[in-house]
Length: 598
Ligand SMILES: Cc1ncc(C[n+]2csc(CCOP(=O)(O)OP(=O)(O)O)c2C)c(N)n1
Ligand SMILES: [Mg+2]
Image 1: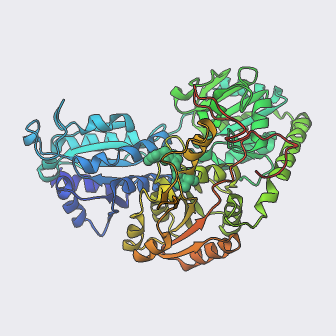
Image 2: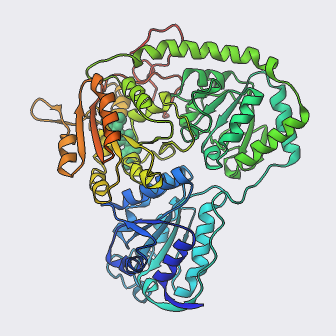
Image 3: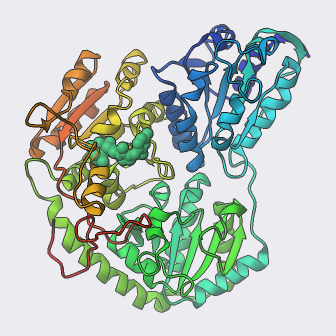
């Protein structure tokens, strides 16, 4: 036991869990915590961006890259309300961060002091944040902190990870008590669950009997760090692999067995294999609407004609969208190890049984390549989207990290990016919070300082968090932002064109009597902030600019003017009932034999 302030105890507990950073913004509510961080400033670093949203996206991205958590710190009231959206981004994609929020002093609860949320209950911030975190704690005395901190850290990192909140009243930071720093939480993925042996045997029976099997991997495989086991398993059993965005790279996507992403903006071979499979083995994937063509049979999947084995650590995901024929509650890596061991014991050869299916898939792949590849070679003004994706792949090393933002720009990367390694492509998939990529790239770079970190950000998304420029300069974080500048919220404009007969309103940026396209001079804006910048209007110039930006090793923005009228080919669908989906106008579904390009 030692006598210490609540804020000192929190700081010591962060350090005990080897948390190197707090991303946070000051306010009168958390100055006590800042004071303790000042005392420990040689051991833990505060990074203070210009908006709380950015702090939480940074923490989320940091975890996705390292699988080690950091904390955020926000003040009472508005400051903490600003992290609701990014917390749900983390929650939807199972990413961990410890959100320390400040509250008003307990002595003033219910008196409606400055910034108290109290119309229904005292110091009610936990009620605001409750749906967007795994758990919220509100210790109201210093002697309640050790238990709350230990439980918070454990809840955040165990099972399916996610954000957790500790809401601390002002006085609890400041008051002292005789307390002990609790033991560190078990490290992330230190405790793993396996499947029942009988279920493993049954899964293997089904896989070996299948004629057209396919594996569908999601973030669960990435989180479980099962890349090696997955690669060995699918290579030995000759299983083609479809990936959700956050599963990308768990199997090197240049591998012949990798079919890419599925759904409206998936790759044709993935949708073809998904809808023609007789057995789908889904591991750590949840069949959300965008990777299941809104669950309409025959587009991406064909359940119940196809059999389903579904493996997940979270029982809530089994059967949410498709009832599995065999459900296994297990950690992905443990499951794969169990399957490999069981396969070794059986010694059944699979090569011939798979030949026909793999040949069929190769045909779909060839048709898709023949359709799409020519556009990757084209130079055009304004720049064709494929060109940006191709040049990024050509320039970036395999371990570079791509922080993707939201919008049609993201659809192109979903469809065509080849992630070579796990945890190198960060996506706000489940919640699609604009600003995730632009802000997250800062957290990614702090997590992997030696690797190039590039954000692909729409012009609309970037203008939601333009102050990220200042944080990169203040903390010397050499990231690259590629602004995918199409002068509008084009993904939403395309919905208006496709589903509402072209009644475009509030989706393009314009000014003046002639309604000319409008955006700020992004490069000028960056330079005014101390960030190096280039504007690219000719596709010939982009590759060199990106190479230059990465070599420069300084915060860098490249404003790239991209053609808003070239749409990614649809190979599945995405529907919003009851609005009719006008296929020809909005993402025409491509079938082989149709001409290249749009
Ligand atoms: C915070 C937030 N607000 C609104 C949306 C809805 N939304 C999804 S995509 C999009 C437009 C994105 O525009 P931009 O970043 O320019 O990308 P583009 O589609 O033009 O490539 C909007 C407004 C969202 N996902 N997140
Ligand atoms: Mg845009």
